[in-house]
Amino acid sequence: VNLKNFDTANVKSMNKMFANCMSLESLDLSNFNTIRLKEMYAMFYNCKQLKELKVNKFNTEKVITNDKLFEGCTNLNKITNWGTKPQIGEQAFKSTGFTTIEIPSDTKSIGTQAFIGCTQLTEVIYKGTTNPTCSSDVFETSVTLVIGNDTTDVLFAILNISTGILGYKMV
Image (cartoon, rainbow, N blue to C red; front, side, top):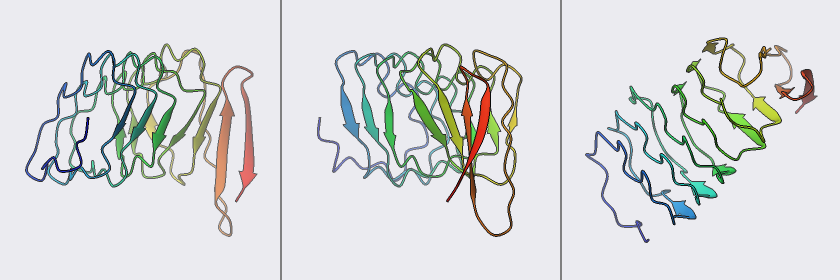
């Protein structure tokens, strides 16, 4: 599907836009203008064959709901440059195929059960300097996301969920 010339400049809701697209394997939404976007509920829900998604330039600053955004995308393991993301909704990544995921540095909150059922997820990387608000049941196991603070270098916090080991990498 070629969505290159799809005009989304005035779109406010993309709720369930690609939900249940069972044969969709990859999608390039790099040209989507999302400046007015407010709703992304279950936008990619149950896209079981979706493996890669390009969402360069997505601006989701005005989005008020993105719950279940990728729920059930069991093969999804790559999102390219997912842009501004002040919140990760409830069950947004539930049962996805990620082994490693990078949470954008401007994320302010992570919703309930956001990564529940992500049985392959072993690393969560967060580049931010301020701890996002999140509930205790964000992941399958009980984890604490610690943010490193260093005035001279940015620290990448790397959390290995399966072992519970938290480490840091200097950049």
